[in-house]
Image 1 (cartoon, rainbow, N blue to C red):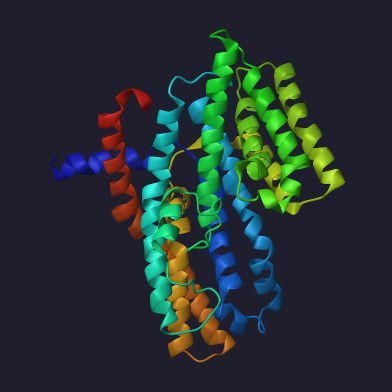
Image 2 (image 1 turned 135 degrees about the vertical axis):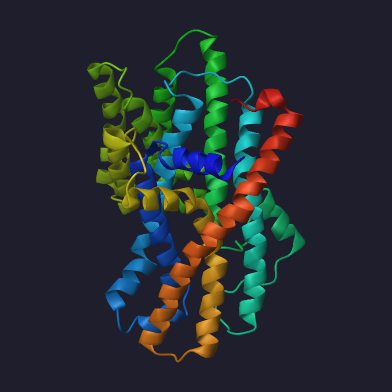
Length: 375
């Protein structure tokens, strides 16, 4: 391809419509997660706390609920991909589940190995609770299978639990669509999946999400994921106003009851995000301005930033602990350095790890089981 042709192709890619609100929410949530882990794991934040106690305490505690944004968006996009109109049915659920694993796991495994190496290196420069014990083969294998939480292995990287939960939720939806298709017997059943999703989120919010013993399993988080699914189906312009009102009632009633019985800020945030997606989630923007170009670019690398930020922050923590004075301003500079380095590392990881691995495994999946990978 000539230089001119490449330039034209790049220009076309740059102006492709994208879900601008979703990218904006992903970017904001990703930054809060990075800052939360910087504040929570220290030791740089321990030195900065006397200077900015309220900010560090908020980042170290409340900012963690930003993960709800990813859960709701995950349900919204899963509904868009697997059942755009809410109809049940799926011919090859195992193929769809495998495709999700191939998307999530290879870059996660690479980031986990980097986290294990970073923890070993950081351990030579500082002693801190954020440094993991040397990884064992069984621990790495559990991470590779996305079963580390279920099997009781300590996570090697902050946020590793989310990848496993995202996979569980997606697999649960795929299996529900397959089972719903069997129940429907090929007949149109546009209300079956929304009803199942509403039932699932009700059980999650009123039972599973109240018991921390379930926090390694999908039902604990299905309330937020189900809100995203319902937001997609309710925002379908082809639905009649009465049908939309009924879908909203199926969501708002159990959420209101759940918040009344036991107010949880994470559930309230999930509801707010779901409402935003219902109103504006399908709106597409074109990256013609610098602001939207930056938002869409950062949104594209948000998963890579999520995966790679912990080992980067760990190494920066170790470097500033070893080389910089233990003073708030110096350690605050370290936190800003770690934040910027996480974004830069996320861009590199996306370009050289996530994207190539995705291409290789998708190609292999199509060659091995072409029927199981939908277009």
